[in-house]
Length: 280
Ligand code: SF4
Ligand code: SF4
Ligand code: SF4
Image 1: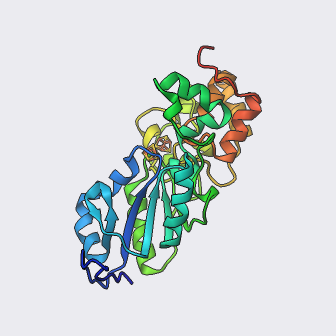
Image 2 (image 1 turned 135 degrees about the vertical axis):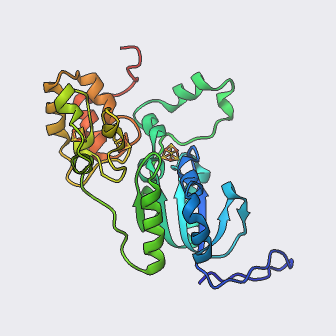
């Protein structure tokens, strides 16, 4: 594992027996990559255990033929992205997608139910220079993925657990239950029950230690749908506490708008989603 050598030009000779890690960026904001840099206390130990071979954000740009683990941030939004992700897959023994952009298309997938040409004509002075696909999709829609880390951004705890597990050859311990369970474990008062604050915690995958309800606000669903998410029941509950259908639909149409469970819930409220209802 982790072998590299002298290339034909005699440049960048590195010999290591440590597993190699690569970090790749597609259409994204870099926030999930920064989570790796944010592991200040663990990064030294991590760099003793693994060889961070390719990570442009941190200045590592050695190009190997094969990496043991690839972390992939961002969604596929251009034809070039779609081509490049196949090359990354071919060069990776294990491929881990990190964050809402990579796992479900991210907030940029709002375009999927709208007219992307209309968006580009509004945003750019010269939309004719923009080469983009009609959709933003997650990595798993294009190549096989070995593991997904959810969130916007991801949790550093989950990132370290995933890397440790992959190095040890075991299955990572990641929750499939909802934010509500973490919220109860934290001893929080339920903002949905106590104050009628809209909260997607019942249908959102845990992993953030119920960050938002712990500071008195509702969950926005950035970790995406939990296993067996009952979005229909939550929609009814949100109506009961006085949330109108437009706001419920918007709640499902954020970081993980393209996740099937959230998209279905949003479409159940507004089957025709174009044009967006920004002024309503
Ligand atoms: S998931 Fe969120 S934090 Fe991560 S790259 Fe996408 S927008 Fe940025
Ligand atoms: S505040 Fe939200 S996450 Fe916490 S228990 Fe209530 S509904 Fe669940
Ligand atoms: S509570 Fe919800 S929105 Fe807040 S960080 Fe956790 S998953 Fe994301």
